[in-house]
Image 1 (cartoon, rainbow over the protein chains, first blue to last red):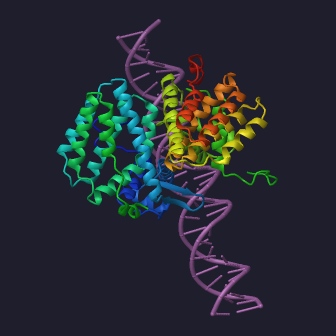
Image 2: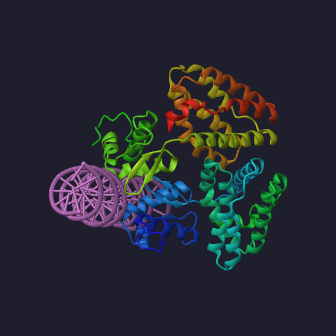
Image 3: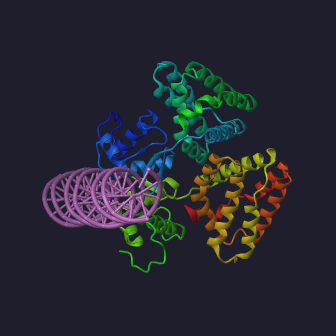
Amino acid sequence: MTTQDDTRPAASARERAYQAVRAGILNRDFAPGQFIEEAQACELAGVSRSPVREALNRLAAEGFLELHARRGALVKPLSATEMHDLFEVRLMVESHAVARICRERRTVPEEMAEICARHEAVSPKDLLACAELNRQFHQALVKASGNVVLLQVFDSLEANLTRISMLSLQLGLGKTDKIEREHRALIEALRHHDEAAALALLEAHLQPLPRKSEALVG
Amino acid sequence: MTTQDDTRPAASARERAYQAVRAGILNRDFAPGQFIEEAQACELAGVSRSPVREALNRLAAEGFLELHARRGALVKPLSATEMHDLFEVRLMVESHAVARICRERRTVPEEMAEICARHEAVSPKDLLACAELNRQFHQALVKASGNVVLLQVFDSLEANLTRISMLSLQLGLGKTDKIEREHRALIEALRHHDEAAALALLEAHLQPLPRKSEALVG
DNA sequence: TGTCTACTTCATGTATACAATACAAAGATG
DNA sequence: CATCTTTGTATTGTATACATGAAGTAGACA
């Protein structure tokens, strides 16, 4: 029974467990390679094992965790190869979205510009908010392609993308104002349905992390 | 309780529940749009609600089901739009794999030819085996790209692809010998690293279902 | 007769109890 | 001293009991 202005009245136990553990992973309270015990998660979220197990299953499906039978939930380390491959796939997905938008001369949703505006308003210190807005922008781009399955695929990359994004910001790479400028430029190119320009901007925007940061995720 | 002369070495309760419900969906014992009650699934698999719930969660994550809070697990209908979008994404993924194989001049794994050989041996009547071999071939193609994330993405499409594949064969579309010939031709093009030819073959091979069959899935 | 309401019923959400197993530490044996 | 065995303990896997909320039904009233 979610009221519309849901400040936070009654989240389900499963949802609380999910959010708590997910935040713990992103904060690196749970480090990659570490096992998360159900009891820990129970205490953290203040719920019993049933919803915790469902949350862990979900996090595993999303790629945050690896479930080992009778061992528990391992926080999945990201290898250099995986990070590289992830960026390649992400570029493929977003390029496809750009191509569809330009070729079918789709109108660029207002949502994307709005996200940029919100991006301006937020403090560069608030890493989680910045990462979230960045995610929303790229998600909106893929959504604008009109292909629901493409959107599902993009969402399935979200877990790892968010982890990398958080890390990138924590390391002080990726200035948020530069990101926002590039987003606006991309919107402009899309509005003119200039596929070549948009693809070039996208490719320049989506650069993998430098090698030195790899070890930090895995 | 499990009898002692259990031919199988004791699959976990969760796995049994997963297999049972998944088979039920593919057989269309559980029709699209129908709600699966946990009690039904419990009886079907002979286990209690705990492993059944985990199985349903997994099936939902894989795209077979939609979980509605306090309502249950709905067998997800596939709309015409989703089927179309699915083929577009699939083509994108496999095209990317083909491009990578050709451009990086990768050796085409023996596995792909072996699958074709097995395909020859199997009876065209055995729909499930044919669908499975077809899936394996395309999965091997994506795996040959060397991009592990691309493979994950392809696997995430599996649920819906399998449902459609089963349906296609049930309807007597897609002759299996034609499929196998096209697979062999694709291997040949890949071995020569002829990207243009391989992409053309792939595109011709991956044709969406005719419109008339749409209603049967949704 | 239609509709609104209160109640009954039942499925899901959550908590907890029980079972099985893997890991670790301590002891036995060569 | 090293290694194998044994046994204890902790954690996951499964079953079941309880709580909560939703949907349907029956009855009363307009």
